[in-house]
Image 1 (cartoon, helix red, strand yellow):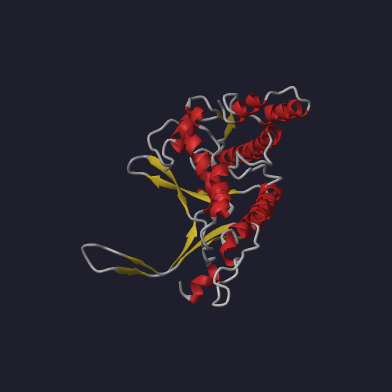
Image 2 (cartoon, rainbow, N blue to C red):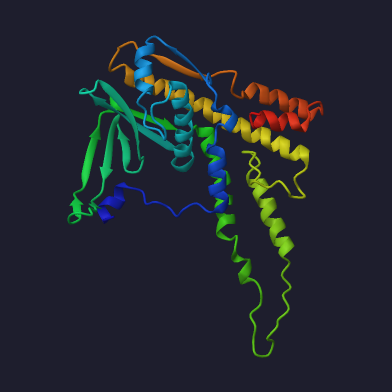
Length: 311
């Protein structure tokens, strides 16, 4: 990008490291394989036809699905965007020719909101063609219709929690393989130097740093065979991690309901829709109950694991 573009568009940082990538994948996975059945969400709307029309043309990984399954995929897609960039954007495209409306995602990079006006800065770029010469597309500055833009933000409490954790995870990923720098170099006088470095201490320090950094999120780093992970420790961490996921899921559903209600008002002035999770999905209240029973030693470990994984 040119200098003027870098003033308005934040450069992409390096790809996340090993631990960060694992955490982002695990935390964004809101639903499990057993959550593929119907009746996962409850829709309360004053215009079911308009709700069906809005959700029936959402561009997700799969098309031509029911609103229930569309919301299922949409929540996970939004969660991935929030975890990676802290924000998710969608735009409502009208298709008068086919009397349809399409809700499509677009990247939050280069998008700013100024006094309620959304401005998208798109730098110069090359479009490559196999049958003709490459085409250089000039820089664009788009003013988006705010009434058709859907913006979802990461909750402040979760954002702060992830920010504090990810600083340590990034440091661990950065120095994960620097253990190869510690052995003393071989010299002519001492071709086989004795290595006094204790690799077990190195691994122990990294593991302790990981568990301390992830204390609030409850993530265990996919470690199931560690000597520091008792069954009680694993279940307690699992409940905390699952609760944070459900809090984010419920917040996404709340924001999604508000944004769909707002953009739907362009078709019907008093339109409203509220999307919430049904009893077929895990709930924060039940997790709190499980945690209390686990602390009083009245809940079995298998019961906690089965509920957290939706079995």
